[in-house]
Image (cartoon, rainbow over the protein chains, first blue to last red):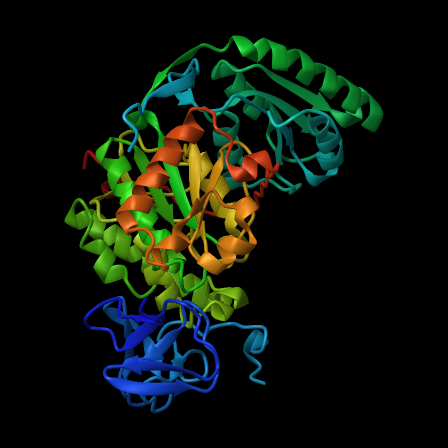
Length: 99
Length: 401
């Protein structure tokens, strides 16, 4: 079974279909990439290099934009992308206080 | 889908049909909550506790409560009042009476306090359990069913497996003439243009678009979107991403109309429920948790609710059964007692979206026939109703315009 799936042809992210363990190697677009950290099911990794400010495309539409340059195979989440509508609240970033 | 998709429904005097015959015990202010709970908790799963905690009047809460007390799944209602609260108990009682249901109003102050009221309430419920056994049961089909959907405890698997599978089920149910309701315009943010292309008329497209724009403004004033920390733990990064996943529950049918909580669609089709209050924010967040939305869909006539979850919500609801569809295979393994359907097998490659969509439709029929969903079996009867403010929907929101 493929570990990563492309949901839509326009997407620049792949979805983790089955959790990736730390130290696991996965092929993305013909490149064998080493995952130093594990990534849980459902999370996103870059399908290709993405520039800072570029839109992150999933399901064929923009779900926000990159806050830094992201290289292929990198986990994409709160640390390197943001909403273009409303900020995302987490227990680590309560009430807008960045820690 | 199973061949036999008709079932027996409870025929109400107002012409509507229900799939359950619940006795609702209703507290009309928090001060009557304990007494109402003592009455309801001494009975089994047929007696449900619901209520409104506020002492001050609210038109929205009044409308929702009137709608739920005359919901087709409700067979009788016991109203428990302290005596000095603002809720218009006499009008509510009249409306329930007019709908042909047994109703009884007890006031704690008048009856002589906690113990006497509990005793009188229990006596009335015991008699009524027997009385409503005679409600006629008649043939009922999918075209007479109203089904709401909601996602809760979402993660990034929700939008890939369970939500689009509900979308497939909705496509089937809409084609059979059912009323299907999806909601949470705050979780349509980012895809208002895409959604409006599915509207039945250009005027409705404009209304759909406006409802999402209203949600975006409302939530930005609140300083927080419809997004919980667990969503991020589960791999969702932004509201747009959560929106796309949530939206896929609506399937691919044309959108028939836009309703607000308490509006009951008169004909089958797919309806978006606008749950975000109108005007300046006055009472806080649009929906403080998933059950607030479930209550609103029930108030709009939903006989049952399809609830998708990735992180693993366990809630059910008073009045209408909740069927839970688990998106994440790892969550399913941990919480399988709470889950009616494992949509996570789609991710593992063991089922297709269409197959799980059919499984959901079959489960809907099974529950409509009286089968207990997991949350019903476990005794879940969550209910919450708080303050909100709405303007009536515009003329182009419903079919016929």
